[in-house]
Image (cartoon, rainbow, N blue to C red; front, side):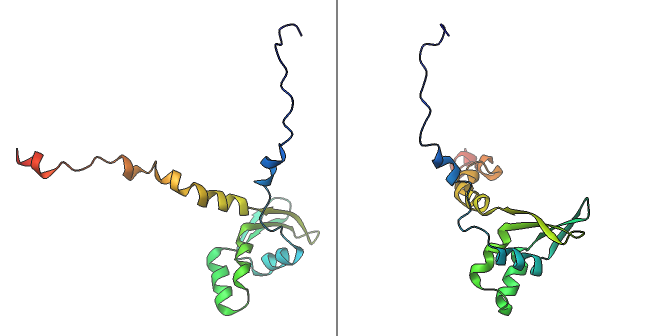
Length: 129
């Protein structure tokens, strides 16, 4: 390797990148059961599977009824894939970090809204001339 001038050592602090992907509070079996019990969004998948979700509106309604606690709004971040034939959970996806990232980046996204590129109305003094 005569053309290599220097070899950088591997970074030892790569663990910081994986922290962003972890949910704030891991999903527990009780949370998964609640999603299955109260899911109002169900989508049929191939192989006899269902994708189950709890919408934010339904979660708010269940909190008002007293069937869920306010902390259980976290259930809206979970998506459960249920196999009807085997009667078991196949996959649980947690989108908590995605929701947090969208909140963090909302200000930046607003900078590129269509309204920010609209032409400003001409000043009245310029119109009178």
